[in-house]
Amino acid sequence: MLKRFSKYVFQSVASMMGQSVYILADTFFISVSSGADGLAVLNLILPVFGMMFAIGSMIGIGSATRYGINRAKGEEADHYFTQAVAWSVLISIPFVLLGIFIPDKCLALLGADAGLVAMGKTYLQIILMASPFFRSNYSVTAFARNDHATSIAMAGSLAGSIFNIVFDYIFIFPVGPQGGAQNINRINI
Image (cartoon, rainbow, N blue to C red; front, side, top):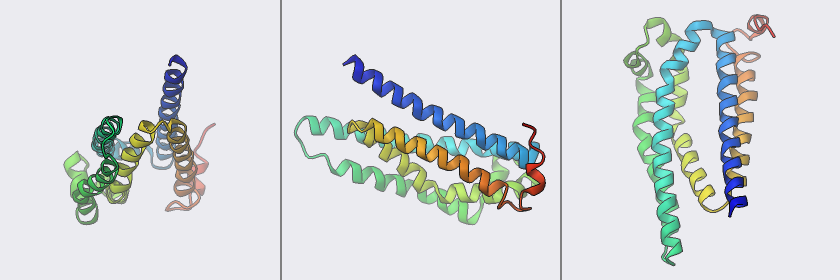
């Protein structure tokens, strides 16, 4: 029992550390490429990430718990997974619509001035439009952990973190708006 518990804790902590590292890398890349204004935009948008995480986790953990309880009782439980993903997508619709139609007004509501709105509009738009994927990811991860597939959940989380770091670098520097050449020279390592 202690060995299984330790494995679960280790894998959960490893997943969270992977996410922390990619957030640090993301923050570093944004600070190098966009300076203080880029960090201000990032900090204005972080509550949106928090809301997506909270809603997705509530749906996922609640549904996975109900699934586990019903399955342990020998009752039909497969519908909980489908419902969790469906609710994750359904609740994302208002966020997607905000991203399509008024991301600039959302940023202004979060406290951005005109310069920060111009800088962060596309970033917020992409995040809001991708909210069904974020929320569904949190729900699927809860079910994977509930099904004793903690290794798969950890591997998926770490792979996502590595993917995010690599593509943050690629999209911010080499592919970035100015080609990134002058920004990469600002890195003092």
